Length: 241
Image 1 (cartoon, helix red, strand yellow):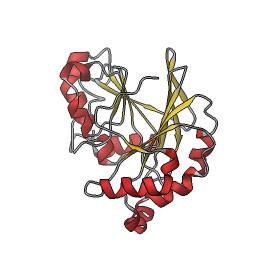
Image 2 (cartoon, one colour):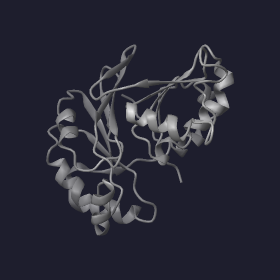
Image 3 (tube, one colour):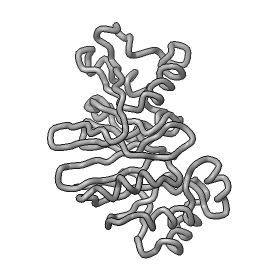
Image 4 (cartoon, helix red, strand yellow):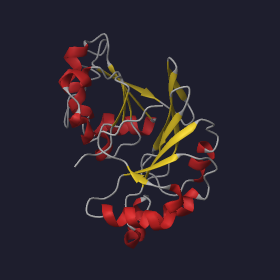
């Protein structure tokens, strides 16, 4: 089972779930920036292993930069890179020249990399969370991260004039709607209501489906929002934009 991670070109990673395990050592060493949506394990599980595996290959003059909300950074510092769970690589080999550094982001902040940019978008989850807009200059991809009903997300998405792809979660089937609501995820009927707020065209891809409910959930999505032609996000799927 692979959890969320998306490689942008060769140097930017969106989330660091177990999907990172598909990357080679050389590919891992080329990642300069990791953007984290939120602190849950399925989105950060491989972050400690990335820096441990390739930190010395990158050198202390080129630390891996992790971008996240301050609340998420605090969780990573206090519960992961704390010397008890994992070494604190912001102090290895020393605090002046570490293998890892954190950079706090805020909503709507655009982080530019030449012609490319990454912008944090609103999300509504059980912990502080964001989605991300990836803009190539000619088109944009939006990744919701983990979210439930969120008017602010759709307000932000509707302002994106070059939107091409929308990747959004649907974690539960309709029969588990109460659990979706409690855990602040979406089910097909909830996503159908959310999409009434979308004012732009985009290719719609579904992620974060629960194992064992994939076929049922995708069928319910076809029934609820068939006009959007929803497709399930695939492992190793490539987007060019």
